[in-house]
Image (cartoon, rainbow, N blue to C red):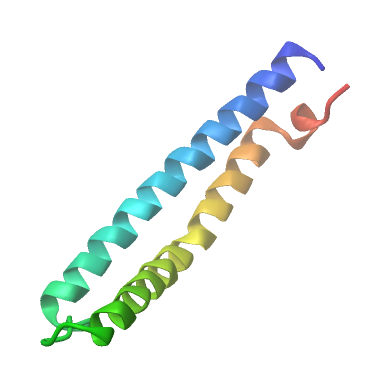
Length: 91
């Protein structure tokens, strides 16, 4: 593989990783905000309800993250288009 192709793939992976980190941070902030706003209220009593509350929070976080995925995909495709799809083909 040419060094240019390796560099392009490395840059694409780094950019997607950075975007995924930003998206994850935004989803975490949204989940924390929703907990503080009372949308996902923690149970008032201890026991089994607390154990069932954590998967609900995790699912809410995952859905918030999933809403940002189309943006990550679009930016990655636009970046690959800007570089040129031919540069990604190993030779």
